[in-house]
Image (cartoon, rainbow, N blue to C red; front, side, top):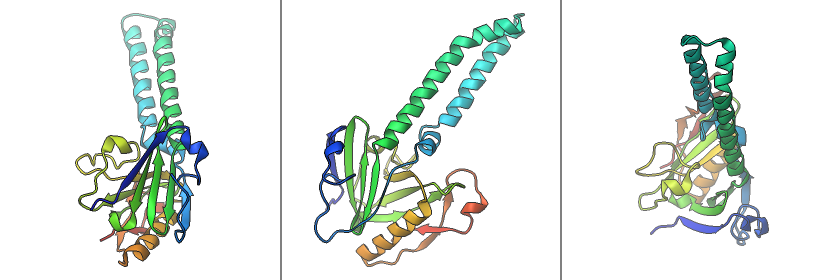
Length: 230
C-alpha cells in the first residue's frame, strides 16, 4: 500500500494555512518536533550551483577579453568587449540567486512524531507527507558550517517523480528518487530528532552510518553518524 501523500495548492495558499508548513492542522495525538527551511545561500551554492556558474561566466568573459588582446586589440578594447557579456552574466547569476531565495522562502520542512512533511514550490505549492513507517533509511551530508542535507529513502512501492521534488531531491537518483531536506541549518540536531522519531514510530533501532561530507571532507564532519535505517 502506498502511503506517501501529496497535496497541491497555488503558491499563495500557504499564507492561509491552518498551521505553518502543513496542509491542515495536526490531528490530536500528533506532536510537532521541528520545523525549518533551507539556508538560501547554501541552497544556491549546492542545488543551483551558483558558485560554479560564476566561475564559468568569469572564465568565458576572461577568454573573450584574451582573444581580443590576442588579435591585436588594446586593454581598453578588451574591456569594452567584456562589458555586455559581463552584464549578461551578472543578470543570469542574479536570477539564479533569486530563484534559490524564492525556493528557500517557499519551503518548510516539518518533523512530527509520526511523519516528515515537505512543503515545497514557488508558484505551485506541493506538500508531501512521508510517514516514518514508509521511510526505509535516511542519511546526513554535513558541511563545515553545520548545514546539511538529509536524503530519505522510501520503501519499495512508494515513488515521487524527481521533477516534482527538485531541488529537494538527492542528486542523480533518477530511477528511484529520494526526497531530501536540503541545506538545513544545524543539520546534525535535526538528524538526531529524525532518527529518534523514526525509531519510536517503527519500533526499530536506527543503525549508525558515517556522515557523508556535502562538499570537501573536513574535521567538522569527522566521526559523526547518521540514521542508516532498516
